[in-house]
Length: 366
Ligand SMILES: Nc1nc2c(ncn2[C@@H]2O[C@H](COP(=O)(O)OP(=O)(O)OP(=O)(O)O)[C@@H](O)[C@H]2O)c(=O)[nH]1
Ligand SMILES: [Zn+2]
Image (cartoon, rainbow, N blue to C red; front, side):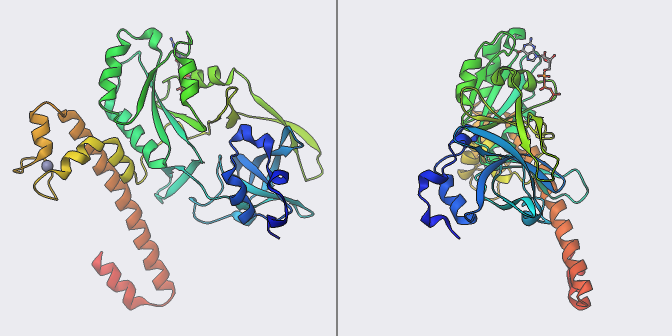
């Protein structure tokens, strides 16, 4: 039964606002849920189950441990992940996720296995803080890789240059880094002295994640943002073992508004089909390339190459073009690996269907 008979006020889960609920989710929820469902946000997943934070009365929240069976999908891109909005139902058969709401954004990485398919690390993220320490020379190529990944997710990247207390000349690093990050705000902070942390808190709007190299300073920033608090919630279990207390740091509301997601594996992700993200990361090169005489210009020595011209004029750095081409090759390699896997799977399917002729044809074409 759809929610048409219920007034919007009575289903609006006010306590979930701190977890990122917004009015536009009302309608989406109503279209996937029936009257016995409540809305909630997935804060952690484990095998076949997940923790979902739901409204508990008018001002509190609680966490339910829900079965994800009904929304299970062999495609790892479609299984529930931290940050998903869900319609949860508690019935005689236990508590389970009946449906997921459509995702606005998703952070995807290539899975560690040989299968080279995408794996969603977190959903419905608005802001991605790329954390870079100022105590060593910044690796611009690595920054560009993280930015491509961030853009690809659909979220807005922000560059966070941290450990400014250890930097010799934070301003000149900022200027260098800005050239590798068109369209991205670059902040200078220190989690130790609190310098710039209020601005960072203001910039991390909606649901945020922090990514970056190990040791960059992500946990230290998260601790300052969260006020060193840890969410402790009562967990309702439907298996007769009663209530118990659980602690999680994977998805936490920030004191000044917004939500921080910190799931295992999200901090140092690799590219997964980030073609669009690369275009945004290197938007100025993409724009120049439009002016090249040849559509398929490789910007090496072709006549009428606008990219080479910009390099010769000192408007574009050779390093940036090299980095762009390197990341495109890397991305194509990942894409070709997953294409090969798809071809293998198609072949197998045809063979089991007895369509040997067609399978041979595909195999021959390679
Ligand atoms: N001086 C100074 N040290 C910092 C700052 N932020 C972090 N550190 C130190 O840098 C080290 C690494 O910081 P972490 O926050 O653990 O780094 P991380 O990015 O979370 O690392 P992983 O958990 O491995 O991904 C720690 O010893 C911190 O105390 C800062 O702003 N200034
Ligand atoms: Zn060119």
